[in-house]
Length: 156
Image (tube, rainbow, N blue to C red; front, side, top):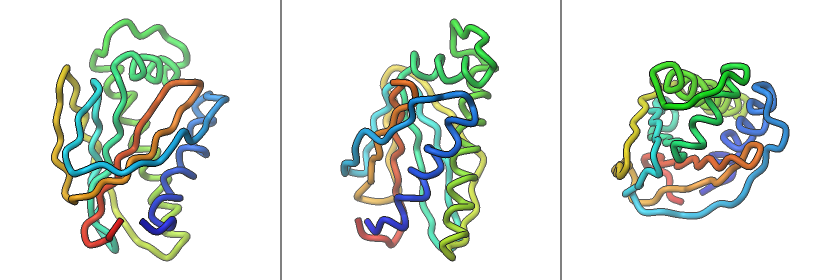
């Protein structure tokens, strides 16, 4: 996949996470997957329409989600993935994808994003809209987060 479709998401993560209070933000790796994504506990789906179309799915385990929600709520302890914690995580993915949208715009690519849809459970399987999915593994203060990218009509 052309880096112009990858960099907006990595740049967004690197720019947004420190604004929330994370200090050690880094890219861990990039890999390819088929269209079937298995969730490690939490999956947040964001649709993309415009010059490019597809889906972005943010994947993390439940403990990582609790830590991120706690940071988003100014350090308030998060013992369970309740409605407030889910809202915090969803808002983070909204912020990340909106920032990526701005990065795309700066490259001459116009996109709009949908409202994030959070799904969580033991064994969630999501079928992406493309046969090939690019997976970016990132971390913030050693909390792993995966971004799965599937765009229509763009070969990877």
